[in-house]
Image (tube, rainbow, N blue to C red; front, side):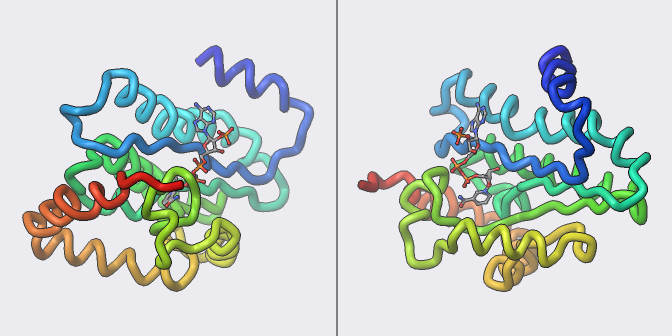
Length: 195
Ligand SMILES: NC(=O)c1ccc[n+]([C@@H]2O[C@H](COP(=O)([O-])OP(=O)(O)OC[C@H]3O[C@@H](n4cnc5c(N)ncnc54)[C@H](OP(=O)(O)O)[C@@H]3O)[C@@H](O)[C@H]2O)c1
């Protein structure tokens, strides 16, 4: 907690109205191939900060005269088990459940959004980030702000938003096939070397 207390002490004189928990790492690969450090980093970076920073801002957010907001940048990968990238997907599943729950708890008092983008053209996405289906980070941001205050759970822009129900449905309908696809096809494609 000391880390978060010290961080907040630096901003104590600012009137913060929006917290965006964007930080994230993805160490693609099977759980048994990952190092203990990679696994711990995923949890320390993807799970704890969004939780603790949300906790730290809430007292001030709830006292502000105008609405405040928290956007947690999760991922479409958190919609179900996706073998081959277990710790990342599980960390995002945590964020999905955490954010949806606090959205209900804080309804009408603080705008809470769980943003679940699909493939975005950044380094984190590996080879997938270079594919034609990857959208720009700028478009992801536009989608996030379009839905803020309206949708607690969103993919953001239309092309990502439509993937949320489709992926959820497929994971529910045929988890075995979906996990096989991710394990054997999707994540190995993402791990291909890119320039
Ligand atoms: N790219 C995708 O396809 C995709 C899809 C769905 C969700 N997301 C999510 O979007 C968010 C942003 O990712 P991105 O795609 O923009 O990837 P990115 O370009 O690699 O950005 C990751 C961000 O996290 C920060 N970060 C990573 N490790 C950190 C650490 N140990 N301490 C402090 N900061 C750290 C980075 O800071 P520095 O710039 O200082 O390194 C950077 O701002 C993540 O939560 C990711 O899971 C991405």
